[in-house]
Length: 18
Image 1: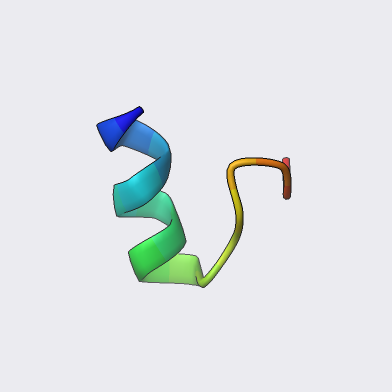
Image 2: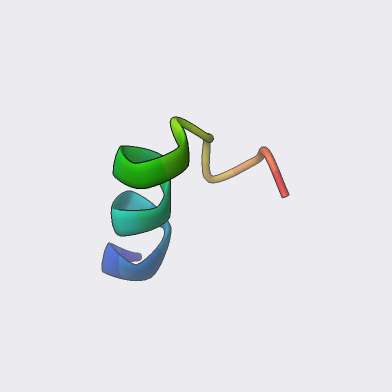
């Protein structure tokens, strides 16, 4: 889930924070 890891790093979200 590198996709969400990148988003999380940019927005600070979680893999559950859709």
